[in-house]
Image (cartoon, one colour):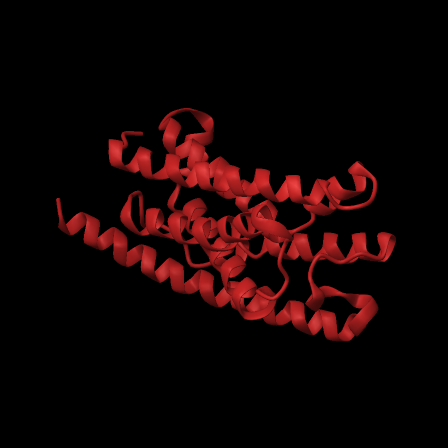
Length: 212
C-alpha cells in the first residue's frame, strides 16, 4: 500500500516511543528481586506491556508499507481495535493506577511512555492517517477476545503463582465475585469504546472520500 512520508515518519516516532518505553520498563523490572524468568513472565503479564508490543508491531508495519505485516496492521479494523486497547490502557492507568509508579527517573519515563505518550501518539496517527472505513457491526465484539483471553490468563496465572498484575484483579484480596464484576465492567468499557471508535472510523472514512 502507498503511504506518505509524513505517515511513515509519524508511525516511526510511535514505534520509537513504544520500544523505548518497553525497554526502560523491562530494565526496571529486572532490577527487582527474584528470578529473571519470573520477572520476565510478570513483565509480559501486564496488559499495558502486551498492548504496547501490539502498538510497536503495528507502527513498524505501517512504516514498512509493504509485506504481510503491513497487510494485517493497515486494515481499518486492526488499527481501530488497537486504538481501543491503548485508550483503555491510558484510561485505567489514570483512573485507577496512577499512584502505582516504578522507582527512579527511569521508571518515571517508562510509565510516561507506555501509559501516556504512546496512547496519545498512536491515537493521533489513527485519526490523521488512512485507511478508514468498512468495519462491520460485530467487529467490536470480536475485539473483546483479546482482553477476555488476557483476563482468563491473569486469573489462571494468579491461581497458580499467587500474583496479580493489577489491584482490581487481585482475587486474594477481593475474591472471585468482586474481581469478576470488575472484569465485567472493564469488558463493557471495551465494548462501548469499540463501538464509539467504529462510528468515528466511519466518519473519518466519509471525510476522506469527501476530500478526493
